[in-house]
Picture 1 (spheres, helix red, strand yellow):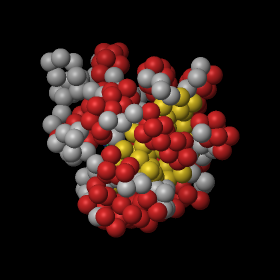
Picture 2: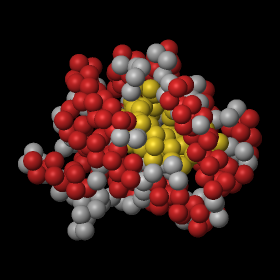
Picture 3: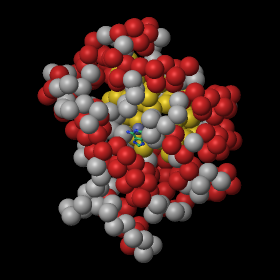
Picture 4: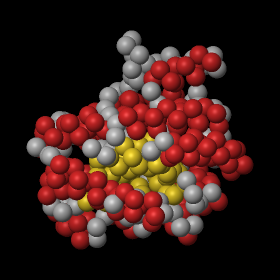
Length: 315
Ligand code: ADE
Ligand code: ZN
């Protein structure tokens, strides 16, 4: 089945072998990042963020990001993905220095163009890191606004949802909106309904995760009525312990309540998942079949941040 993925972190999609290869080239010490089997090693969400940032520290040049993007898009295409939106953090690409960012972007656009000609389209959502604070988020928003259009199609925020409130970052979301970018924010993963309401108040039409909306039936109705799209990543939620197992995950309940859910992998090698694995688990756990998968892909196509002509090809 052809798939659309809306929530994939580029750095978080780096296979451990890729990061180990870069570390060897650069003589970087990544002790503690991998377990004895060579997988990413972390405990809990805070540990995950630390491991993620340590692994990302060996991505140092435009060429490193270009090589990573080529590998990630090739893997996504093998999974049947025909269109993917990638979270890319300028903070990890030359430290959100706008002149450096343009070099990183140019290198990635070249790879994205080649992949597009080979059957997988992609776009970037420039992503602020919440626990780096509002000042650094502003720099990311300026990068996004200055390079909006073409491959850069959205602005978002990930990182530790427990830090501050999303509304502390309103300047950045306003800046990105005025530049014509689509808006999404991680919310309702580590905090409850209020966090999702904050993200909606910033003008987000999509929410990263958003699954804890189920704690407030009024909010579930609002999401359904306003046609807000949730970028749901069930395997990520189970791996990080937001839910204890697939059976207790609310994705099917949200879909049944009329909320536009879509399915993505978030940071696949960290969570030992792939798009095929997510679909297989949804089929096994909730008896989802063609009807449900076609519905989530239609909802995804209707929520993409790219130009209308590309979107129409997905519908
Ligand atoms: N960055 C990468 N993955 C994330 C997640 N699941 N939540 C918040 N920030 C992230
Ligand atoms: Zn995410």
